[in-house]
Amino acid sequence: MPAVDVLIVGAGPTGLTLAVDLARRGVRAMLLEAASPMPGMARLHPRPVW
Image (cartoon, rainbow, N blue to C red; front, side):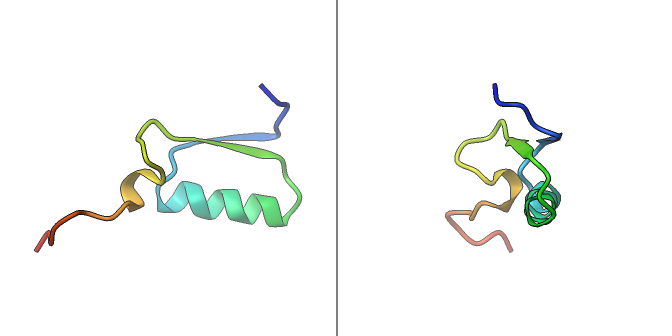
């Protein structure tokens, strides 16, 4: 496993936003997501939910 400064658990909207913000600041971050395909809660539903 590569050396990182921050480990982000969860690739939902908050995790993705944090990963982008940290990368822009030059912070080495690793993003982990249990669900496949990424990005976890932000993926599209195959049918309307309403």
